[in-house]
Image (cartoon, rainbow, N blue to C red; front, top):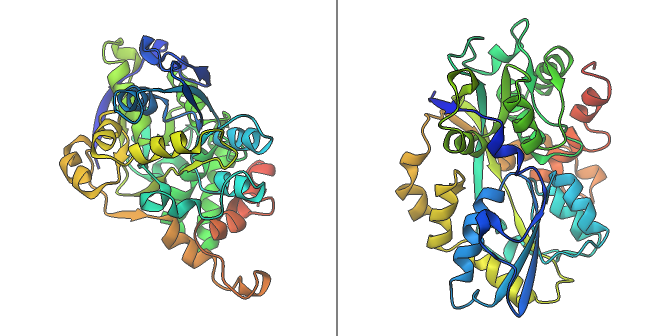
Length: 359
């Protein structure tokens, strides 16, 4: 597994926690005769802060202004469902867009409206520890060592939390084939080791940065961001991150809102996210690109040897087996299967959280 030294200071990431901005890095992005409201989960703000100005330099985007709103993925999705103004949404997990389909805000065929199932970038689940790794964290089993305190957000509000838990669940359950083994791990983790439960992945990063916990379960791009933003921090504030040899592929979808007042502008921006130029910008900001040629060209920017990268498609195929009787004769697949089994109101991991880690 790769271990990367990261210098961690309080100043840089706390300012990125949420809210809206029209001037990322002091660059005005609001001017223009047309306008796009971007509503997203908290984590990709650094990526959009680089990509939006680049889009505005293109012939298509030069007269399109932007407003941005960031927060916990589930919370942002619920806001848009209540008709908060939005033209483009980018959420941590697919169910947060599915909610908008049910509310009539996003078209049913949204996944086919852009390449790669409308997913312009992604990441993998990583573990962040204090410099020198004093707790000896090397893999998922080490999170259950006596005295180890883990920071991970609440899956009720955060898509990041779902990805974080799907990684060890998939490892321990062999991709859902031994469901109880996966739930036993998650239960012990929540009951005995998770004492800080922030609302979003970005708030979890900030809590860890401020000294809470021994291990942060997070997006790989969050650790990369900390590395760059806090390289001059004192030695006592530095951390390391590692990519477990078995982890989970994070896929963060985007969609155009069908109530947009300028769907052409919104669609043009979404299309730009998949261009080679934008894909390189995603990679520069620590997010894994999805266009194959750029994936190859930027591979060196993402250290770590992954033996098994579990996916939603693979896990959903297992967890959805036998659900046809309750679903119009067809087994659930993908996120529908995973959310129903683990994170819905009756999901097993939801029950674990609601009981404080007791099954």
